[in-house]
View 1: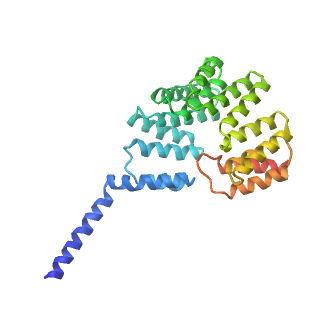
View 2: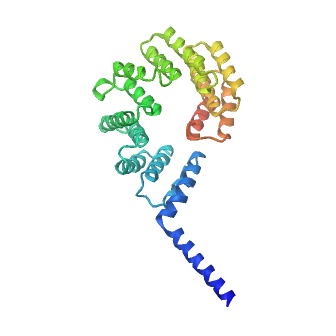
View 3: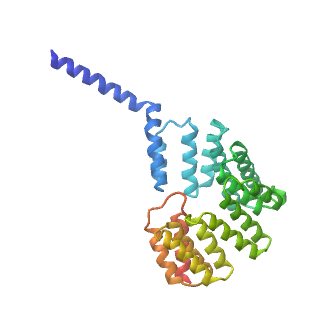
Length: 294
């Protein structure tokens, strides 16, 4: 009798577990965090495969799908997924940011007929992302670059870029001086641009990105010896940093120097564990091809 009761309880628990596993809520609860882990490891196809089995009437699910498609260079699918995320959660700053990025890449890769429309959509979503969260520095950074790069008839403009840069002065002083450097460079005020890059690095001396920004700029200006010295500073901070390897190789290839070293750095990069914040392996492979052909 006791054995039969125990078996019956076990059977009920097993049935409950099967029902739970089959429910959308449980699938979403377990599948989404695992998909995020796969995304962070740049396993975008695997993340998408997992998300396909998750209940999708959820902004976070569609947003992650869109980000995966974006990273795979499938910008049409990215914007479709992210549009659904925004419809479900219209006040989410991050979703608008990624949707703006997807439309921005569609503008870059489409015909001259459709590009202006996509560019305008990118601007609109960047502006919405910033309006929803004034502390979203990623969104502000993308909007700043849009204002700096886009012509006036598409909503760009130097005055807009300058005004937006000023809003970061107290939020992130290093980022503020980085943006001032970009403005000065665009105005061909190269000495001031270099000074602003140096100030950004001085304010965040342990941030690899700030050090690499200065090294890259010095390389573009033909100051190769100074550039090498600054790359050396970055190497002292973190010699295995993927961003450092990629950007240093890119600087060498763009200036057509140290190509053997560039190839070595890119091979190391391709064998390193990467995150979504790093340039894609596809970009690194393209650079490696350039380095091999000289």
